[in-house]
Length: 435
View (cartoon, helix red, strand yellow):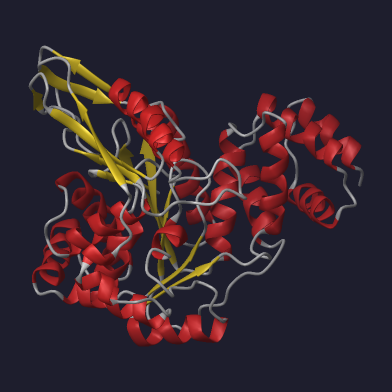
């Protein structure tokens, strides 16, 4: 078997067999197939596409290129959650303690953020002492004893995907549906959970900006998970404005804690409950979404979700006193109000611009080597559909560098679109996708 022949076959629009896909991924991972040949193949896939069976075979080959976690020592049905990422997306911080407080074990592998804000691990490191560098033994022990553990992705988790993504990133072959879906799902399947719930964002601040593309990606990933023997479902959620009110690491952590106290923004709570409802149903804890939502509200009302979050932070070395006193989190030196120059209604907030503004402040990474400032960020005072008066505060910027704050302020101001008529408000939870 030769890679040259496989490139020619795909270039001609023909299907690759399971064995051919395995040969290709194994050879690329061990270095026997060079980058230039894999680049030619990914370009051929961009032009000719892959069918459902090919996409599943590609995903499984990448999953099997490294470690596949064995979570059999954890009792109960393990349900994983993945988000395609957005601005102000701190969902895991509130979601995991809620479902864990209801007896659903959460064994999650997370990464650091590259882009607008930090990833889940960066946000958790707002708690002094917190570490995701825990042993497999501690990881399994924590899940069994307290219901949650979040660890950093190991270097050998789907290494073929890491190598392939780096190549796609520099050869303009990122935006192909089968390649995107297999990249995400190879890591999820290697993480070892019994069921997977996917949060697929759509809109200006999402990776998939067109609604139909978000639905297509969700359907592709649900199909992969189902064909791989995992219960899988997806929720399409809105990212035409930031999620919640906080954008920036410590600000987002505080907002997640406020949500666990029952005081969080309604749109954020709706996304948490939509995803959590599916997780509880997959785990056999709830019969339907309505029952699941009642259960989730009960652990917020009685304080057990907040207690579970503190227990989780403590178990991984973090200072849990911050959970009960959020004034302890680091604060930026300066703040700046962004004021409206017209009266009317917020038509939309360009989420991507707000995200870039946060990165400008130092709240995100432009490169993997960038240092994140956990204290900076943006708090939105007005969201879509809200009435605005001339001179009223739209948002507040928190920063440690006045020059960077001036740049960020311009981005946030221009992110707000004010109209004279109130537009129809789209729901934040747009659609559920099942197999």
